[in-house]
Length: 290
Image 1: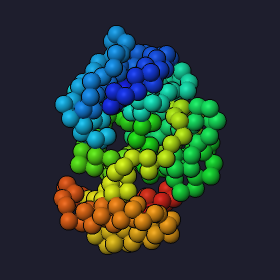
Image 2: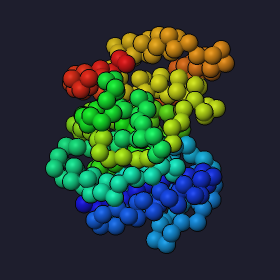
Image 3: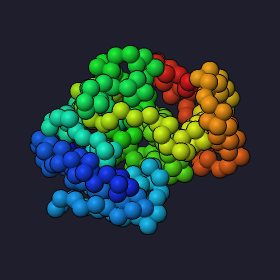
Image 4: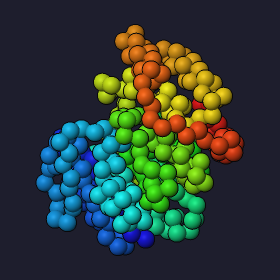
């Protein structure tokens, strides 16, 4: 299977980007073709053979990654699998690409693989980086209902069938939007603890827009993908969980501002999932109400 990789960068991590590219170059098996997308910024110096695309403006995470997908032909058709890697990450092992090839070849319905993210110094995996509700054991691989945006592999046929990431989300929940559409089309998603991306431990709230976009995109996610009956249930549960977490006053105001924006602004095309997909999500341990 042909494997490519998409990396988006703001151009502010040249050393980390170079280390990541070196780790991709060391992958066993056939060469992994790489495209680096400068998301509104110039791309730092990269090794010979690495393709680059420089965008005049920041299109956000899903928009930048979609540009990277199209760099491999419509829907990424020039390759069979695309890796999506954060520019400050590092592939921990040299066999990750080969493990991906083997996994996709062995299971024709496997559409997406979510890697395990581990801190390079401690080896710790944050709970939020295990894409399931039962996240206490990050070393347990399993079928899941979503995936990690900066540490994953996607069979490009998924993009051909269900489309790319939602550009309008800009940041937050774009992976779950794609995951739900892929599951609705019959694809499966695996979390693999043996496929590791080293990444420094961080908090998502470090981004200034975090609380607003998380809330807005949560509403968009529901409006776009859930049967009408489940939309208020899903959003009601997340409203309650947000309040129980007792965010600061400014964070809560930003969250409610985003929640309102999600209702009054366009969320893109609505394609509610089938009820059998709701049941599949439930059997996989995460019914689409949480």
